[in-house]
Amino acid sequence: MLDANGLKGPIEEAAQILENLGGFGAIAWFETERRQFRLEAYGEDEDVMQSGVAALALMMPELATKYALLPQSDWIKMSLEGLPPVDAGRFRILGSHDKSKIKKGKIEIIIDAGEAFGTGHHGTTRGCLLALERLIRNGKTPKNVLDVGTGSGVLAIAAAKMGAKCIGTEIDARAAEVARENLHVNKVNPNVKIYVANGIRRTTIRKDAGYDLVFANILMKPLIKLSRDLSQSVAFGGHLVLSGLLTTQEPAIKRAFSQQGLVLVNTYHQDVWSTLTYKRVKN
Image 1 (cartoon, rainbow, N blue to C red):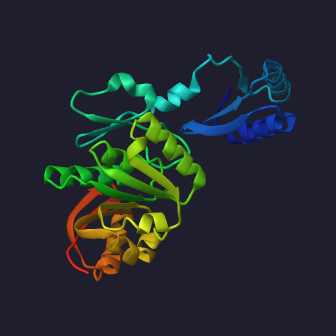
Image 2 (spheres, one colour):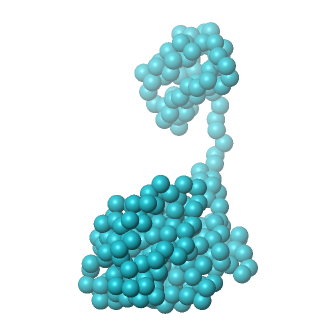
Image 3 (cartoon, rainbow, N blue to C red):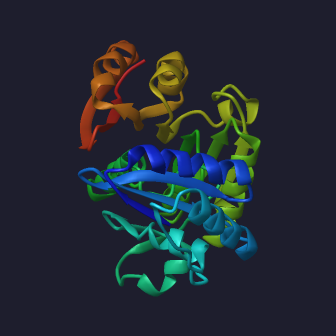
């Protein structure tokens, strides 16, 4: 670590010296206060650090230099602590590291941060869970669910924990594997099937069309492209929950789904994200 008062030029030069020496994992300088600058460099080899400090002391004695060993830390644990449990109605999404934070009366869904979207921390995932919560409170607990773009499987798992039979589709084969692992962790694998599929035209998905709830938490363009297929997959009186949308994208989505025999029954906004719930009322 180097400190300098009003010496931006030498700090930049010192960074270049360390860069030329090599062996450092990260080198960065920044302004700490007005006209005060600091350079920090990190490395795993103590000899490299000593050499760097010695070189700078010799070549740039006007700079205050020092090095210190960082304490050993469990960086994985620290990163997981940055993902606290998320509540969405009766549902609580938490990582396996937070099992001690289970709340009485909540339906817990264990999802660890990984290679598939959907830890519950994103506004779109939470919006979908709140949409499911609203349906259940209104006596519309789903029994037959399709989750398009299932990611971590969190929405299918939530519905399965309420007694539904679910199908999840995922275009990413690795994400589909993660979702299947999460089914086992949450003990709902007998009631959820995950398929690798682009859209919903796979035979095993279409043959069960007439779902009383369809989730599609993806992006605006694929939602518009799939608007007809998604709408026709919903049973009469069933619901379609759309998310993955910015609030500014709502008008385009509403136009795309306006001629599909649906009526908009609820909207959730969280931060800049929207979740729309439609009910199918006609062909």
